[in-house]
Picture: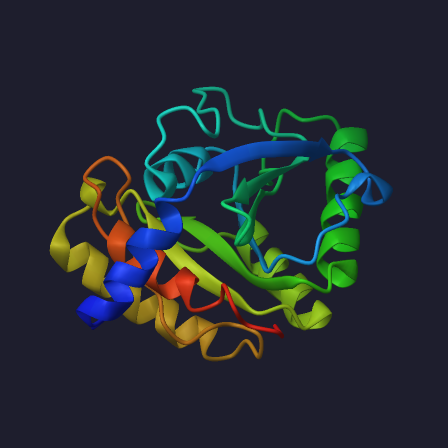
Length: 213
C-alpha cells in the first residue's frame, strides 16, 4: 500500500489527538447521539482489537486487552479529538458465551450496522494465523446486506512467515472480490511490531471528513 508523506502526516496528526472513552452501550437506544464520522472495529474474540486501538491512538490502556476472549460485551465508543468516533464492537465466535449472550450481541451489532448513519467503515480484523473463518464470513454477509463498507485488516502478521502472509493475502483478495461492500484493499498490521499502523492511520484519516459510507 503506497501512501505519500502528506497522507501519513494527516493520519499522524488525527490520531495524535486526545482520545477518550465516551460510553459503553448494551442496546441500540443507548448509542450516543453524535454526528461525527464513525469507524467501527469488529472481529472474532481475541483477534487483537484492543491492541490495535491502543496502537493506533498511541495509548497503552485506551482499550482493555485481556487473555480471556469475549471480554468486550458492549459497543464501546471513543471520541478522537472531536474529529472522529472509534467504536469497539463485541467480539464474535466465542464458544463459551451462552446462547442468550451471543443472541444479544448479534441483535446489537445488527441494529448498530443498519441504523448508524454516521458509520463510515467497519474495520474487520482477521488473525493472520487463521485467515477467514465461518463467523467472519457471516459478518461479511451481514455487512453486505446492510450496505456498510468494511475493510479487512490482517492482525498479528509478525506471527507468520512472509510466504504464508503472501498466500493469505492472495486467498483473501480472491474471496473479498465476491463481496459488494468489501473495500478492495487489505491492510496488514502488527500491533506488537507497530507494522502497518501509520498506513492504517492515513487510510482512516481520509474518512474523517467524509459524508457518506
